Image 1 (cartoon, rainbow, N blue to C red):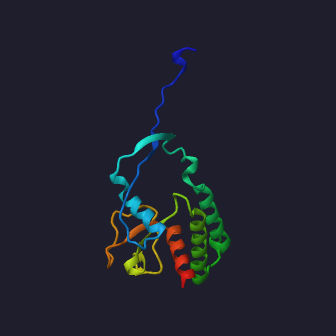
Image 2 (cartoon, rainbow, N blue to C red):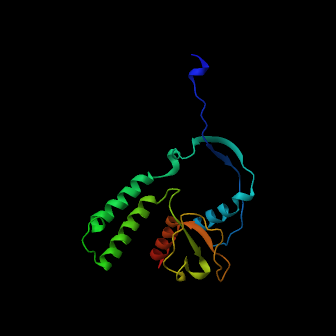
Image 3 (tube, helix red, strand yellow):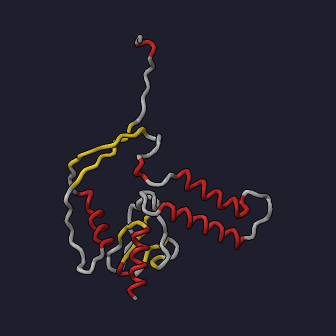
Length: 179
């Protein structure tokens, strides 16, 4: 085959490396596993990792299989849910019903992301006995963050941590069953 029969192409490649390091932190004596893991992750960036393996992917061509659920399917289910609530028709929609339908559709989408790297984060502070909500401050109803916030809000104990929604939910369930 003649080299004139080939064309030259360029793509951006993303290298995702896997390395390991032993990370040690100090935590409160009564710290649960979720708090320990979060403390470790908070300082992990300050350590050197010896890369043992890597994956390569073309940017924009999809994520590695470990990236979590297919986001297109999550979005399709969300849109189907909204369409079944009447959002695709020209008929009038009751405001209260619309709020309920959107809330239920959102909850279902979030549930399908649980345990994946696409699951939202929440900001929790033990000293506040709750999570941060941008509108209401500290309380029982957390805001969902799909990207790591640059800065955490100040808490009374200066103990605000970022954690995945499922970690916070597990802490809540443990607290509820321990009562």
